Length: 257
Picture 1 (cartoon, rainbow, N blue to C red):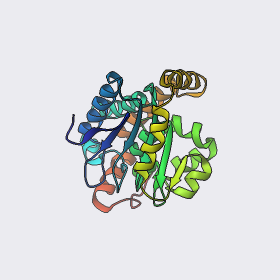
Picture 2 (picture 1 turned 90 degrees about the horizontal axis):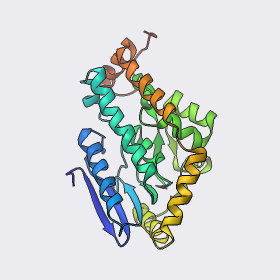
Picture 3 (picture 1 turned 45 degrees about the vertical axis):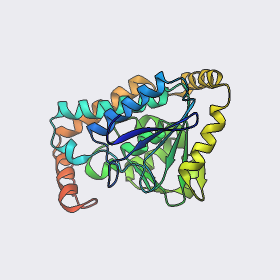
Picture 4 (picture 1 turned 180 degrees about the vertical axis):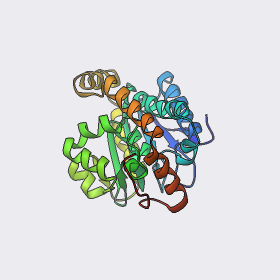
C-alpha cells in the first residue's frame, strides 16, 4: 500500500486513510494509493463496509495545485482524469461507504466525499468547491454529483462563489448526513459496522439500482473534464494559479481571456 494512503481494518470495516501532511493535498501518489486501496477492498471479501477519512485534522484540501500548474494540458487531463476515475471507483464500490470529514474537505477532497454514500462531519468541518478562485471548475465529478445532493441552485452557488459551507449548513442541505460531537471517525466506523453486519449483497444491489436511476452519467463527467482541461489554455486560469501560489486565494484579477 502507498506511503500516503493506508487501508486499515476495524473488524469488517475497511478504513481508507489519506495521510499526506499538512493538508492531504491530492497528488498523483495519493490518487494512485486510493485506487490501490479500492482494488484491495474489491478483492477482500472480509471487508463489508468502508470508511474514507483524512484523519483527525483535515479530510483533504484538494488537488496539489503546484503539481497541476507545472503540467501541460495533456498532463492535466491525465492527472485530473485519474482523480475522476478514483471518485467513480469509490462510487461503484459494492459496499456502503462513509466519508468521515474532519476539518476541510475542499475541491478534489469534496469530490471524494461526494462519491461516498454518506458523509459524517465534525462540528468544525468546512466543505467546498473553491476551484473558481484560481480560474478553474471542479474536474473530478463535482459539477455532476453536487447538484444531485444539494440541488441545482445551491450547487451553482457553491461552485460559482467558491465559498465553503459549515457543518450546520451542510447538514441542512443534505451534504452532511450526520454532524458528530466527538470522534467523527469512530462514529463513522460504528455506523459502517452496522451495514457490514447486514445483507451486503442486497445493499450492493440496492446501491447499483439507485445509481442507475439518479447516479452520475458518463457524458456529464466527460464534459466536465473537457471543460476543466480547456481552461488551462486561458490566460485567466494561468494567472489564477500563479497568483494563488504567490499571494494566496482571492487576489487574482480576471479579464475574461
